[in-house]
Image 1: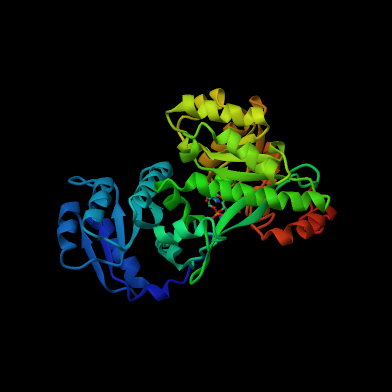
Image 2: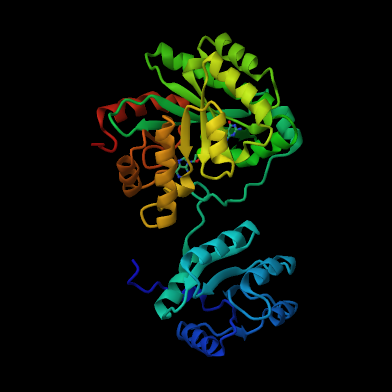
Amino acid sequence: MLSTTPDISHLTQKSVMILDDDVFLIDLIGDMLRGYGMSDIRALSDGRQALISLHERHPDILLCDLNMPNLDGVEFIRQLGEHGFKGEIVVMSSASITVLRAVERLAKAQGHNCISVLPKPFNTRTLAQALARNETPYTPETSQEAVIEPITLQELRDGIDTGCVTLVYQPKVPTKGRQVMDVECLSRWRHAKRGILPPAAFIALAEDNKLITEMTMVILRQAAAQLLLWNQAGCNIRVAVNISMDSMHRLDLPDLFDSIVRAEGVKPTQFVLEITESRLTSDLTMTLDILTRLRIKGFDLAIDDFGTGYSTLENLRQLPFSELKLDQSFVSCANSDRTKRAILESSVRLGKALRLNLVAEGVETIEEWELICAMGCHEVQGFFVARPMPPEELLNWIIKWEKGEQYETT
Ligand code: C2E
Ligand code: CA
Ligand code: CA
């Protein structure tokens, strides 16, 4: 892959701004771009001047150096937002790739379309590769950055109790053996005009409007009713349900959840409640109270998206979790990214030391599967194994998986 020069002929009509204090490099990059047929090229060596020039016209693509005398690249990118810049950014620097990646994350967090980073020195081919990143077609199913228009508050209020919330289920499979023990339920919104919508369209809205606990109860009831049907068909799996941290102020939650699942004819021990790590808040006393009583009632507890929060070790020590889900951002590309791999390895060591069930999320390729197995994770969840599916497909899927008709594990 790396040895070929991508075709960037579709970019010839795009306007480019080069921002670098090295005038020699400006000339060189200009020549490289012209070599690819691009002609609308503006070059500047000072960040402040570049910001002023944006009043005239915004370029489609900005090639931005990080180390500049007046205004460094990070400050410049921050100020770009205030100037309404919506183009694509390629960050260039001779700083280490770790620094480049940090700036890329920062730019993305500020809402910029940072398409790639370009370590210096570079050549014509690596420049083309950096620019070609925007060739990747946008695929909502795999893109974490897809912007989903939320439903309206009225639709949310009207729909929670009237069948708009529906569930799909994604298996978590063991790395040793083939018996499927767990599935996670993921909610979807059945919208009259827009079809099936992902959680991004309604979960945050429900949280912001104090409707999330009510919605979670609907979800838990639905999952419990489904679980009873699977039990009656001879399938004894556990179902994982996502719980928002915003529900962690309801001291009656353990009793509510207990009575919901029992009313449907199943038991709390058949459930894992997943709570996102990045949102475990400072009010640990109340959270500890609720989580401990949920455990006492028999629910298992998982820390979701592990690695994305800050209070990690303290939470792990204090809260009664039984499972740790390694966030997919560390799993994806862990083979090629040393930092991600190091975070994964230390999370796995930590989880093992605390005797937690370790689940790797977002495994998409055979390489990731093999790495995760080699690290000693207990379970895997991800598109490589199965996409989330409607409940009526699950039993057949499990039969096939257990027979080894899907991917053969060793
Ligand atoms: P999550 O709990 O981390 O769930 C995993 C998400 O990753 C799901 O997205 C799933 O479809 C997706 N996924 C699974 N395997 C792969 C993979 O291999 N590659 C990629 N790229 N993605 C994969 P989904 O269903 O859109 O859910 C997003 C988030 O919304 C969930 O993240 C969870 O935090 C939240 N959520 C979903 N359902 C509920 C719910 O019922 N209640 C609450 N409070 N939150 C929910
Ligand atoms: Ca989850
Ligand atoms: Ca997760």
